[in-house]
Length: 233
Image (cartoon, rainbow, N blue to C red; front, top):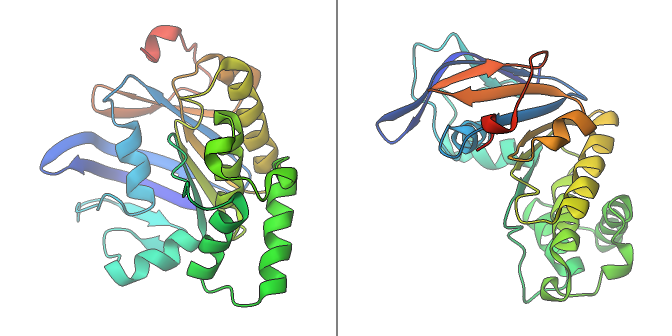
């Protein structure tokens, strides 16, 4: 099991956001986290890559890729994140650097040393997301959908076991959003777990997966239940 939460409490500061969370993710699973704004979706995702700490010593289990997140030390966080791909709604690309330089920066920061291997890896992930021809372009010259594709390529650089995507289609038009979710779905079929928060309820029918809903301080698995647009508003 890549992620295994059993009775985990999620806090923002001293405020309890989600109570006694039970959540699992394994290889190749495509998982949606839905819910209204402020329901705890982003907070839950942040605990998985240690942006938010889990302080709850009473949790039965809080493991991410074999690590106990309650006991995780600050110095251990970079190694955890190197095994993940994290995709943000606002892309978080370096706008003064080309697409190639953005990806090169990540690889060098994660201890890739050989130029030929770096070049080869950059080309491979850009080809996977259909952006190889944009390698020498700066982010501001790209459309929103193209920037998100680059962000996905960046997330793929280190061959992650898990991709965490926080509202990855939130700033995109419907057609581009569909293309992005389709790409993430294909990535999951290759064995990477994809965990995605979303407000785009139409995607659940088009690209089926496991569905969890944040509501009233609880996380509920609703995969086989009817989900309506009001669950996203």
